[in-house]
Image (cartoon, rainbow, N blue to C red; front, side, top):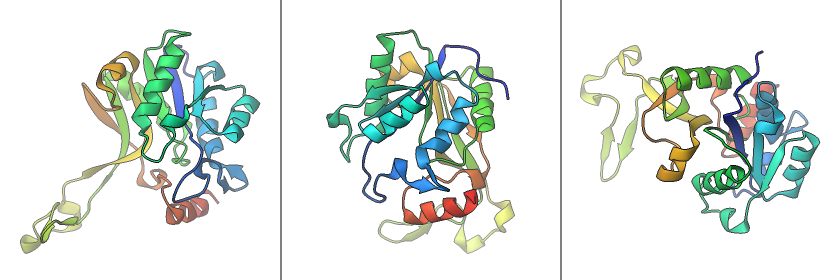
Length: 225
């Protein structure tokens, strides 16, 4: 597989210590490998190690970064609380990196999406460049009978009084958290990963699991086996 040749793209991975639902989630073992290793495997196949950065407050993840000869950024404790946002971590990392080098585009990968592969990242970059986007996110398409309840039940994606066949429903675009790409300088302005002219890159649903809880973890373990 061809590598990303241009140095104006860098990859950023946020991997803070701790997690409420799954203890030390980024290091939980799947098939004997820490979860973060699956993301590193996907990106190191296609990108120079010098262009990959891990932002973390976890010494075990720092050790993994060193073992792979990957850059790491010490994420401050104030940005590692339960209520800290990924955007805060991204902003901090971009400012640190920009002190040392010029960057134009960020490929932001979350360790909790281990089924995303190198090809997905490459194809997402291609769409981002071809359409001259400011930002792009990965998603899968699905047809769902979705309801909501505020004061009373209401059908969101269909009319329950005139129920359609599922194949006649409109596709829902469901963000899967696997890949985000955006312009670095414009992120500093908007402080959000989706902004300006944006679009989505379609992935397969069976590669779109984002590990958030123990049930997700059990499913992914079965899929990887």
